[in-house]
Structures are given as C-alpha cells and as structure tokens.
Length: 112
Image (cartoon, rainbow, N blue to C red; front, top):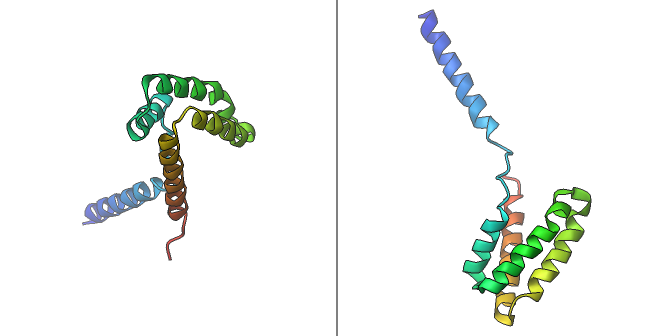
C-alpha cells in the first residue's frame, strides 16, 4: 500500500512539474528562408524581390542579434524591404504587420 501511494505521489509531482515547465518558453524565431518563403506566398514576391529580401535580411542579421541595435536595424531593414515592393504588395505588407502587432498585444494580456 505504501509503495502505491509513493508511486501516485511521484506521478503527480512529475506531471505538475512538467506542466509548469512549458510556460514562458518562446518559440525559435523563423529563419531567413522561412521568412522569404512566407513573404513570397503572402505578397507574391518575384524571384528578383525574393533575392533582394534575402540580401537585406542577411545584411542586418548581426545587428538584429544585439538587443541594443536591433530596434534601429529592424526599422532600417523594414524601410529597405518596403522599397522593393509594388504598391499592392506594400498595402498587403503593412496590413499584415498591423495584424501581427494586434495579435501580439492580445497575447500579452493577462488572464483574469
């Protein structure tokens, strides 16, 4: 009987620990290739535009890793990316960024 109670307690503690350990982990950021693939699909980028986007992303990759320069680098990169888009693509891109921002803000709200 004692062994059964100990086993039940161990299973309970293990499952509670596992459930709590998953909280707060951020997913890995997408790779440049994944970003370009998604942008090509959503914005209809041409091969030339996709190549330009890859070059721009690689240009700012190191700056994006450093938190102190990431915001400025992200703004510069975004401006360069937008310059490669047609008017329709730009509208879609801006709308997509708004949707991502709204979704991120909703995800940060506390649950009552």
